Image (cartoon, rainbow, N blue to C red; front, top):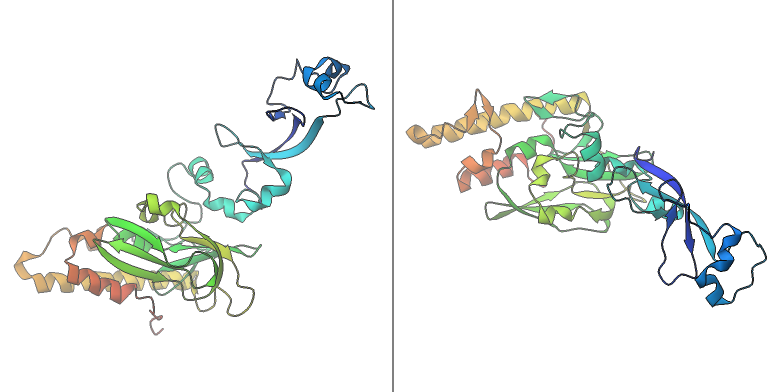
Length: 305
């Protein structure tokens, strides 16, 4: 499946010109073009080369090729048709392209977010880990990995995102810097990692702002052998039931924090019984670490059903 904004066009260029310029059919004024007519014989570049042409109606230096470009970009970049599969445009990965997301979902919502639990989106197509990560696998074998909406809701100030694994067959691992403390996120199954979303280094806030889109952590492929990337993960209605349990557990955790604080409880921890976004910003350092260990431990296991 290709991106709906992917377009094809035929492009021409002069192989003898010192500066190669693409002339795209339908996008460039070709009224003065000489290359595909007998007028090329008066072209200074042709005469300087002293070339002999077998076709009097076509310049021998005229090169034509099939190109592809993104119609969503204000200044399209032409990509040779043979290289289109190297990027996101020609595969299912276009769903995680920032340009596509801005055009297709300008309000930040995604069509997969048909299920929600207490305002937390739980896309039905994804598979979830016990430490609140997800994986999206495509028919082609390509996959993307990120954090779920539950973890994204709790993150307040995120100081940085680093990647412990960036390529090869491995368990995708990242480190979040939260209030000066590092917390590891480890996907439980191996994946053939092709790249990490290094844009998060410059804009870590995107991880929590768009966890199911441009804030993904890794992209890659199903491992060539061994455990399938989705084995042992939660999906569908099971994931909905599990998130409800997690929301309930979190509410109990916050109430315990309130009891320990006594009269000095911070009233911003909950809003109508639901924990407020950016909860980590309102916890003490000890409370934050207890919460991270209880809900997001890299070795977390599923609760007994």
